[in-house]
Length: 289
Image (cartoon, rainbow, N blue to C red):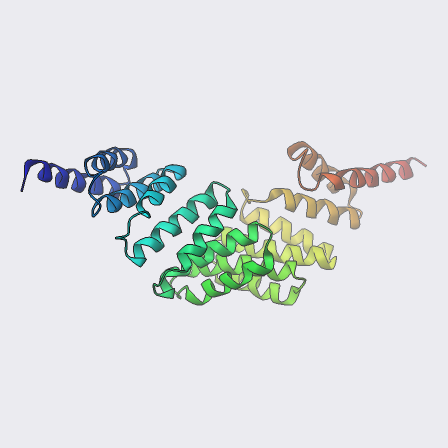
C-alpha cells in the first residue's frame, strides 16, 4: 500500500468514527479533505460526497448537503439504492429549507427508484407532508396512505404521525367521521402526552366545525394541560375565544382575546379580532343601560 493510500484510509476511518460520534464539524473537515484527495477518482469520490452530505445534513447545513448529493448523482456508478438515498435526503433538506416545490420533485425521483417499497416508507411520508403543507390535501392522501401500510407495528410513532395528517386530509375534505377515526387512533396509541395532544387537537377542529362549544373548551384546556408548549397555541386561542363568545363567557373571552392581540397581532385569525372585540363592547354597553 502506498503511503498516500494508507493516509487516505486512516483519514476515512477517522472521519467515519467522528460521524458515528456525532462530531459533525470535525467529520466534515476530514471528508472535505478526502473529497479533495479523490477529486479525480470516479469510483470513490461519489461515496465520499454522499458521506460528506450526511455530515452536513446532521450539522443542519442543508444546502451544503444538497450540493454534495447533486454532485454525487452525476456519477454513473451509483446503485439504485444510493440514488434513492441521495434524492431522499435532497428532498428532506429542501423540505426543511421550506422549498416545497424542489422537495416534491426530489422525493418523487426517489420514489421512482427500483428498490423495495418498504425502504421507501419515509419518503412516502415526507412527500405526503410536503403536498399537505403545499395545500394539495387531496394529492397528499395517497402517499400518506401508502406510508401507513409500510410502517411496521414497531414504528408506532410514525403511524400516529401519518394518522395526524390523514385525519386533517379528511377534515378538509369535510369527512368528519373518517377524520375522527384517525384522531382517535392517535389518542388510543400514543405513548406520550404530546402525541395525545395532537389527537385531541384534531378532535377540537371537529367540535369547532360542529359548534359544540362546551366540549371545544374542554378539549382546548386539556391540550394545554397535556402540552403547555403546544405547537399551535394561536389556533387554540382562537377556538377558545370563539367558544367563549358563543357561550357568553365575557371575562374569559376578554382575557383570551387580549392574549391573542398581544402575541399574534398579525396572526392567521387577525380578521376575527374586531368582531370578537365588538361583542365585548356590546356586552359592556348593554350592562351600562
